[in-house]
Length: 181
Length: 355
Image 1: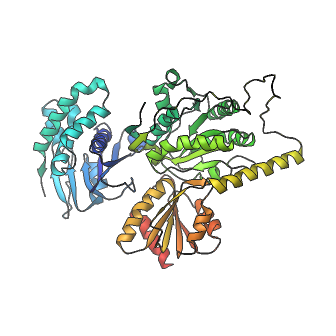
Image 2: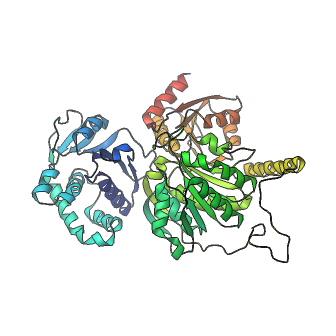
Image 3: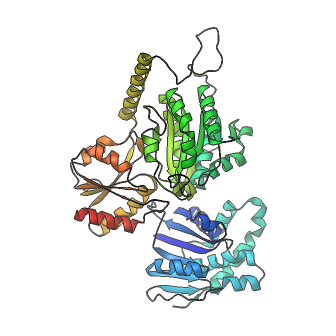
């Protein structure tokens, strides 16, 4: 099993940290993992993206052009990455701010209105964990217990009291995600 | 401290591995994409745990000369930078090579020339392997292709540097520096307290003074010294060649690539095999010494070799020298911080096969 993922959105949406949590969780599950961020000028206040690979085998190229799953969190990223999903692959997107919805017919498309829900529940900082929950629902690779272990490992101790909130957000995300195609 | 599994950036792995390898000092100056090395060391503050000095110098030139000084005292010292910063250090590097001192220099390469870009590249191959500074000298050059190797090669680099009294370079790039992977870290080693016989640590009554210099105004003596250096480089070429092979047993066509490009070629190789193309990969781990002999042997069994690099074509010259006309050699590269994709590498292999 090898899952090649791109997560893309605005800087500040927690794109890189969601990728990091995936990688940590994969590591806790004894998988091979890689996390390759964009670190260019776009990091300084524009779009950000990260490639995450979770695999049972030694990972070859950490840099990819086509993905099993694309998690898309703004319109610019939709324009950039919709075509990068492998035929038969998965596209997950947040509808917030999307003016042109995905048009591919050869992939499975899910929508998760995580930004709206996070704002309604006053949990804006948990936005990326709603999305993470959605991903975990439709691609059951990472198990919640290992994600929690991953959070414990990756977060400084002073934030550990927020882990239950993260867990709630993941559960909520699992309910929130809807298949649209 | 036991062996420990962590998820780390390549840059962080270098920093942590340096502490654990028992390094005595790090002297650096920040530059993207390697600043995490300095940042990590500053935060870890090993001064209080192992006694390792971590210092942000006022410039790259200052940093490499601090390394020169530390190395002259027989200490395990290092610096790191990225391409433009490494260019600034070249004077110090050739002095260190000329004075036959051990040290570690890490280059997390970005695109050039000039200030270029902050994205990954492999365009400093010539500089790293063929000199960079002036005079007839070589660095030992190690090319990691994973975060694990970023960590492992720190200790290896120090070992080789001290074994041959020669500066060693880890030639990495922005991709490996910035990406995170699993890494097994070795237990903490104690810093050595041994006083090396050649080190300038103060003259005791029992021996003559040690002199460390790269200057000799007597041409005959200097030439003799040059011959001594060459003999050392030949010995390194004899003993220290390292490389890795993938599916070369039945390969008809060979990718030759190091570092990040080698990872991309591994994927391209899988894609090629899926299409029935008998491809293989040779990944040089040491760039100096270069795996010439093995490439020359493989030239007898393959129909061609494609060097894949994030440069205009630098390592490909060593491939050509290695095979010495025995087989077809070509090059595919991207520049300016662009990273080739496995699909694009495969396409180029296919057109290379067509001839």
